[in-house]
Length: 394
Image: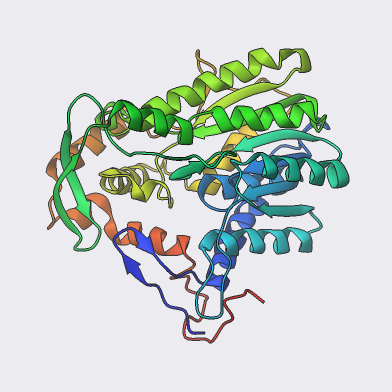
């Protein structure tokens, strides 16, 4: 099969198996090539990553495996390929990671199941019991538009604001024009459903199941990933449905630490920077801010991609043998570079002055699109995209 990108708006319906492998390989190489202090013996060596196949979850798994030397069990739900259709990029990503880790002598296994379901949690427990014994870190990076519970009820998240509709500049991803975007207000039900999907309930359920099964080591750490952004984006994030969900996620971190204190288990939220990921590009008016932020941070020399963020998290913010570096609310701030005053001042200026004509200069759209295509395994300069390849990643 000759695999080419098929793109409409923020969706790409194809993925390239060799390109996705290259995407994973380059992240692995970054960690290998980046020096760090040797960690003490108590560094996590058996890590569960829930939502492990793309974005921050994938990068966190790579960082844990190659910075800590940890065995990792990943959980995700990705579409497998067929004779006439490629798999989702996440399917190729986790298969590539499992293969590359094994080649480097690092234990890795992925459970391709719905992480929200109790049955999946029980399967993960059995794998841990049989092959790892106990785990000492849980990374929660689940991003999903909907959640089906054990009784069959389906909850759908809504990417909306609250209070009153929000109007701002937006980027039309099909025409590349700067347009006016409008985000509607959520209903109370949409807020509740968004919390159900994107809040901390499932994270807490995972910790409960793992603890009760005896497969979560005493003194373990668990971290969930979040984003709220600067005041400029508050109507989209902090004051929107996502803000309610992320507040619940934070409250869950506090609840985990309190409810499992007898076993020394501590929960944290890592507030990450804005990033071009499959989840973030679907957020209304998100791409224009993300593109501008990346351009500004690159110009100022403080930009980090996914693997750089996750490697910094594990080797600095959560360095084994040292206290976790968090703010007064016990939140780990990986958005610290993005929220610097001089960075935000320039982002705001670019946002105020951006037009269709100067979008490349102020938002670096060509670089934005390169990141977009890379997520699906395309536009890597060492991959022959005219070559016939199997969609089954053989």
